[in-house]
Amino acid sequence: MAEGPLVTAGNNFPLDYRQEQDVTCSRRDSRGCFVNPWTTWQFPSYRLMARLFFTEKNNSNVPSVKEVLDRVLPILKPYFVQRPDQCGQTGPSVRATWLGHATVLVEMEGLVVLTDPMFSQRASPVAFIGPKRYRDPPCTIEQIPRLDAVVISHTHYDHLDADSVAALNVRFGSGLHWFVPLGLGEWMQKAGCESVTELDWWVGSRIPGHEDVTFFCTPAQHWCKRTPLDDNKALWGSWTIVGPHCHFFFAGDTGYCSTFKEIGKRFGPFDLAAIPIGAYLPRGIMKSQHVDPEEAVQIHIDIQAKTSLAIHWGTFALAYEHYLEPPARLREAMVNQGLNPDKFFTLHHGDSRMINHKETHSSS
Image (cartoon, rainbow, N blue to C red; front, top):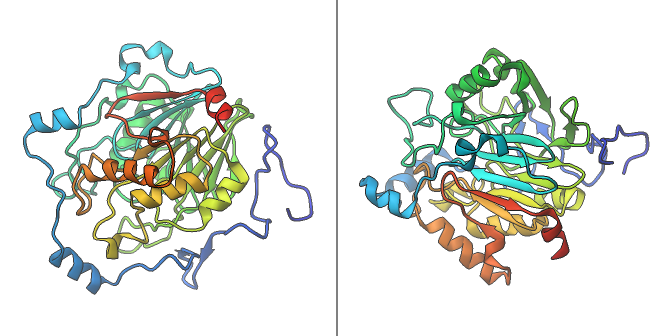
């Protein structure tokens, strides 16, 4: 660690790791736009994207019959809709409820945190065109009983949904704390968010009154764009939440790169991680920006996750793989690595999993 004092969180983690020589810090180009600093980032040309999208077969094959989808991808009513008084009561454990795509309700250390809230029908700036979800949210924002914080990974419409942000503001107001990467604070404030913390990679912050839990913005390999003129004006990232009993990691949206070993070295082992497994074909387009199930397992290994929840699948048809392929390949990849496939699990929409802190650490 670099010389000189570092502000330290209540759980003995420095709040700023950017002075360390062996972490990958955020960078900007000559235009002030953020860039990916890894050799694994090679965004395809528009010509290649057009050729692959028009020549490769789309095998997503999402059924149009609701009864079929209800059978293979059921939507469950979250436990907190029927028992809202139990939300947040996890003791030293961590509980995750998958609400579809990259939206996860996480309960840990007395806090309730939401990741990349997406409750709209389309991932689009308009309501009549763009990717439409084929599995509805298992609850409404009005049915979420309490919420302390939201973490946003990046600005793409399937992860930063304006209507969902507006509805959360109406429901929770100034009591809701938003954690976002650099460059996104102004957008959040214009959307009406009052308590916004904008962070660079490797920098942490806390919610007043919860000084023993730290929210770190950590790196990811991705990009940002919402309009024709805002390419990479905002940073993207993953999120690491560390408390005295539990560590949680949210990968957001990412391609595979070396940074996950850096994250694991500093914050691992994690009791629970939420890692994307879908939207990876055609590979020539998606490889730099979306991990496939095999790479998701490598992230699980790199960050030293005790257990991981699969996200970013089963909700929107964003790519060309069969809509049920990601979890099948995930299980096979875990077995091929000699790992217990139940340690990187999927959930039905609306379902929850409680991860016991003592159990995960006694098995390490």
